[in-house]
Structures are given as structure tokens and as C-alpha cells.
Image (cartoon, rainbow, N blue to C red; front, side, top):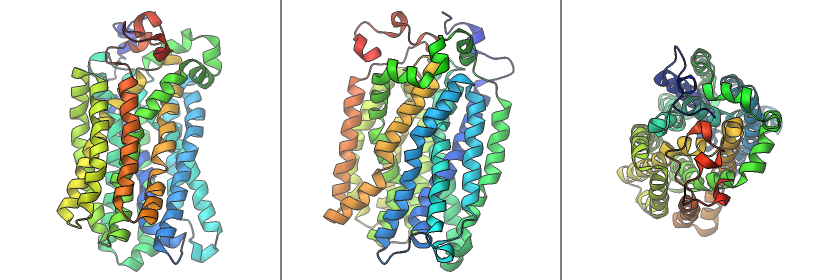
Length: 455
């Protein structure tokens, strides 16, 4: 079996890791801009234009329900696009996912509202949201593999973390565009047509991301695997991944619970909490989120460098413990209604998210063999997104409605952190794994790791 020292595997002529990482980042930023734009609009626009009710919180909950629909479609996207990613290649699949996301988001800009066509409006919104979720289901895994399968183990966490800059960058862009439109337009103008501009901009961003993705080459590890993989894994890589690596899929998914639930509470639900519960101006929430996203953008590479030095598990364990503590501090700071305290709450929350994000790409890649890696990584990532991320805003609203305090939501978030902490303690360290040899028990198992954890 080839090793990571083989130059034909680790390097491609006329390509470089910075270029590949930049291409992956551009694509994920575009897709997450589209995905998070919907989430932000759900808290500010869709609850009024597509789900009008007498109770603002009920309208928001309905809007977040359609937001969750996108998460439900993500495992299907992970299965289908993961299959094509393992059979046809990472690069081609990523181009397809980017086009699907861009077109669906662009069409949202032209949807008529409930006042115009009634119930057909939210139904069309749900349909386009399903396409968004399907596309995103195959995006992250491919973007990470495009980087990790070109590099080596010494700086894999650093380079694999670049696609993870996409979520905070995309969210920053989405919140920033809506903040500018909201501050320059009247409330009536923003609700009438201003929000549509943000969705229309998706077309320009897709073109930029598409050009960059067309420039990079297929990963050398995939090209070798295409010629050498067993026939059963070539035919149905998803089935092979589930059958042979279900423990890794579940363990990886559980490590994301604190990160995923925390991210959507710290960056999305917080806007609802600030505007509808604390009754503060929406700019307070949007500004806090944008500052927090900048913090995440700066610190993700820093944590990734640390992960390449001390390993993945210590970062995971520390971030999970911090989630448990900050879940309660977060709402204590929000309830002060002080803009500085609110900004601190969000910024620290997204700092914790940055620690998680710095290691997810490398850790997930190091769990699966090349021939099923796209399927395994995508399924694990999106399984957590459905079970933790999609439900977080809905559960948060339901908990506040039931108990009337943010601390109930904090207890829920702390529970998600506990799940991640337990999974992190059970996980093996993968820092020195040779991606070309994953699946070979002789090279992938450490002496202290039992076979049941590996296969």
C-alpha cells in the first residue's frame, strides 16, 4: 500500500495547498452564506412574510421549522453526493453541490409572499429549502477532503481547518448584508424588497466559487483509490461505510453535538432572543454575531496549529468542557441587556465553536479509508447537524415558552456539551494517522486502542 511519503500521492504538479485551501474556503463560504442567510432571514423576515400569526414567537417557530427542513435533507444529500464523491471524485461533486445551492438561494429572492398567493408561498419556500439542505449535505465533506487528501499529517489540522472558516465567513457575510440593508432601508422597504437583494447576491458569489473550484485538481488519494479500491466499495461506498465503520460515524457525530447546537444558539437563536424576548434592537444582535464571527475566523487557524502540535482530543475535550460552563454564563450575560455584555457572550461562544472547528476536518478525515471517506465523513457530519443543529433553535424557543428563562436553554446546551465530552473521551487520537493507510489495522490501530473502536 502506498504511504504518505509517496510524492505522487501527496503532491500534484501545478497545485499548492494554499490554492486548494482557498478554493475549498471560497466554496464553503458561498454555500454557508446561502444556508445561513435563510436562517437569519427566518428570524427577521420569513416569520412575518411567509408565516404571519398573531404571536410573533409562533411565527418565528414556524419559520425555524422550515429552517430545520434544510437539515433533514442534509443526510440525503450526504448519501447521494457522498456516493458520487467516492465514485466520481471530490472536485466534480463539489461543483455540483455549489450549483444546486446557488440556484435554490437565488430563486428564493423571487418568491411571492403569503399575502400574495397564500399557503403556496411557504410551500415553495420549503421546497427550495430542501434543495439547499441537499446541496449542503455533500459540501463540507468534499471541501475538507479536497484539502486533507492533498496534504500530509504534520499540518493536516491547519490546512483542513480552512474549509471550516466557511461557516463563520458565510454567516458573517449573511449577517453583514442584512445589517447593511436593514440600516439603510426603512422597515417597510426592507420587508417589501430589501431582503431579496441579499438572496440575489448569491448568484455573484456562486460564480466566484465556481471559477475557483474549476481551477483545482482532483485529489491524488482519490485517483489512486479509484484504481485499487475493492469492487464492493466502488459500487456502493455508503453501504460499505455504514457496514464497516458505523462506530466511527456515530462517535464522530456525537463529538459535534456541543459544537453544532452551540453554534446555532450563539449565532442564530440569539437574534430571536435579543429582538423578541429582550425586546432590543435587531442591530444589537447582528453586531454581536458579526463580531463573534470575526473572532472565530481569527482563532480557528490558531487552534488548528495547536491541534497539529498536541493532538485532536485535547482540543475537543477542552471545547466540550467550555460549552458546558458557557451555556449558563451566556444567558446570564444576555439578560443584562447590556450591548457590551451581549457581545462578550456571543464572542466567547463562537470562540468555543472555533476550537471545535479547528479539529473537525482533520479528525473526521482520519477516521475513514479513502474509498469510503467522502460518504463516511459527510454522513457523520450531517447526522450531527440533524440531531443537534437543526433542532437547537426550535428546542430553545420551546424551552423558553415553557419555563420563561434562558437558563432552561442553557441546561439543554450544557447537555449537548456533555455528549460531546463523553464522545471525545472515548475517541482515539488520530493525529499521526496516514490517510493512505486508514483501514489497514496494522497501521491505523494504536497499541492502546481496542479493535472495536477502529472497526
